[in-house]
Amino acid sequence: MNPEQIRNAVLAALSDIAPELDAQTIDPKAPLREELDLDSMDFLNFVLGLHKAFGVEIPEPDYRKMGTLDGCVAYLAEKMVAA
Image 1 (cartoon, rainbow, N blue to C red):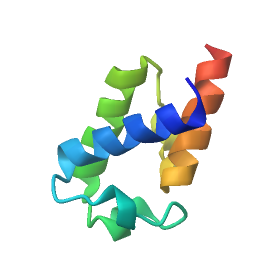
Image 2: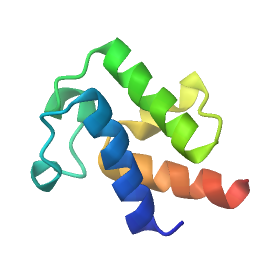
Image 3: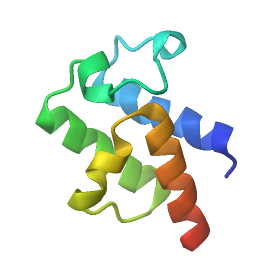
């Protein structure tokens, strides 16, 4: 998967938990939890959705690496290469 495909899959996972999401307005460097008003359960559901979509393990200590859209894309791209 290329970064654009990963980004689209991340946005799809976000839209599953935040249906009001407008992908065009997300600042890729802004904290997702603040920007989308996600609580801890929403974020956990988001991470589980990514695990299901990508088939990669995302350990809890790595959640901080996934705090922004850009961070998610970079983290998942790295995991995909390693897998």
